[in-house]
Image (cartoon, rainbow, N blue to C red):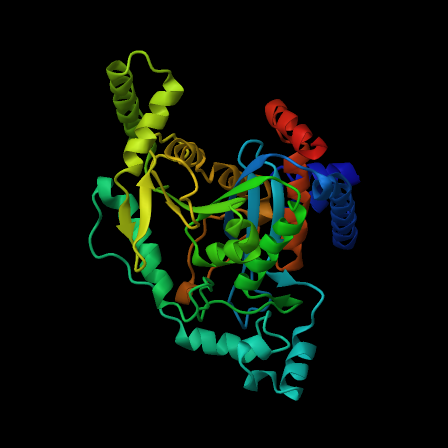
Length: 423
């Protein structure tokens, strides 16, 4: 029965549907999930503990995060609970090195709240608090009162400027936040979990990257490609600051225009193919790889400045259907690279590995999918398959990560995984 529950959990079956089809009671079903989760975590620890003593000359890594919406438990308070996970994937194999959720199931909200009041935690600045990493009730209420919704653009952007507008929009939204690293939208339509405690997302980001620092401590050069998120940027640079100074780690923002239709993506691909063939014709004796480097270096000569800090963004000359429009910006010192080396790094820039995993989570784990729903009054929403217990989010993600890494990987990816885990 355990194997059947596992197969259904990672293959789009709703939780309630599973215990009905298998004719088991809800308590037995959730006990089975706990057992599967325990065994998956133990298996992952046994396999991935090798990473602590492994050495590879270089790794290309992609980091991003994903939001999950939980249903309310009481009809009297129809606000949702929003949680975030952050993950990092190996670009070549898709292997997910780490996946963490901003939730602590072992803490009790009422006991923590009483203790925070008793020790006068609210009277201290955040760096001196005992419970700074978790959301307390008054902090949540204050965040709701101070929340300002980001302004939407008044006019539609032209297609050739859409990516640039999106980059500028993220910079502008970040400057409006009370803490530039805190991206959580704490509105009047969200609440804190009844069980356990929600962790500030920026703390989870820092924990994630310090976990990677320890896990990949013996690896060679690390190249991080990060979603354009100031919290992810800060956490990555803080965790790897010494390696960055030693030029053994670098980080880049990557922004992708994901709002294009299939027809628009196809049109861009054809246009790119035409430009590439024309460049080949102008350099008849040059191999395709070197033609690509030539085109990348040409784009590197004309970066565009964006944001308050005038970050330099380079347009990627080779889009694909998954990433039809893409631009990159370096976040660390790159002056020690020669032009060809930097062009090769830019050529690898992508979020595809982590985006693919998050897409598969939505498709394969029904409780974590992005549902189609009808909004009720006051922007409150009810999601038919989403869980009520926030601890279930972390368990399902742990289970699916093991399935994705070790079962669903293709033969080519498994070969790369074998090389990773065996040095």
